[in-house]
Length: 395
Image 1 (cartoon, helix red, strand yellow):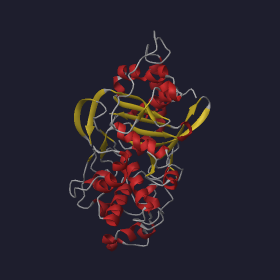
Image 2 (tube, one colour):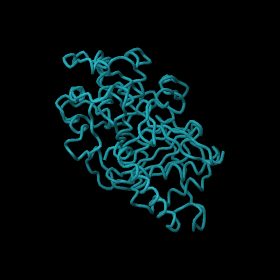
Image 3 (tube, one colour):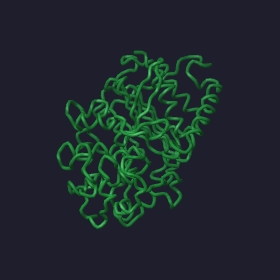
């Protein structure tokens, strides 16, 4: 199911599942840190690799290793959670990484049971949207694309035949904030051919498909979950630079971060990269993007994305649901740590893919699961974040 189902139509079910899940786990002997455990669990330190990451022990960055490492037996035993990977970064150092074995798929196609490891790539699903936002920011920083208040159709002259007073009011900002006002439904399962993203993916021209959706609200007025916005951003990038998004992204973002092993799902009819959900990356490489956002667009002393773009991306731009605000293709939420509210931005992908960025704690937490069709896909990452990564914060 799409994230919008989880975030809009079934929030009451989330709460029920969350309460039931937490209650059940709290009653399960040996699965919660400090409950019926004879000794503090041990976990291996992150592996040394030539990938640009500094490594540190949790206790050297103000994290309690026993509280953090307790997630390993919890999620090893809780097979229903289908946890695949958890990584924690603090003060610029990778301090925790653990991989599990579980059922997985690639863009809806089963991969069977996978033994995950640092070199094994994973679907990002809709975290791809957050990455698309980053590369648009780079393009605007370089002057290849005008600012966010530029009308979209003015940047896509190949679709001039579709112009209308209503479409002319849609800007890049509206695409970034999922408020373009076009009729779009990802609230039904992706197995349903009526799902708007599925129709877009298999259309002869995915971008024309998006632009021919009826206008049903004023741009900027209503948030509605849509992969069509990311697709149109990708079309704008291609038109402005002459490069498809995968090529542009590799040159301007991935190469400077030392990321060289990625895959893309592509539209079947056009072979262009699917900008809303098609990216596959190694977890350690995806965590670099979280650190880039945490560092206001800097990596290894070099400004890759402007700080202004990062700040706008993770500032609330629109109300997305009762639980979340929305920035520029980033979700914005909060947790409670030692009775203090801690705000976070998160790249949010179907199946339980989460890239949490926590500026107040100088921390990045990456969670990847295989819960593509499960109601608890919204619960499991939050348990990993709140009950382990954030519960480990000591200073």
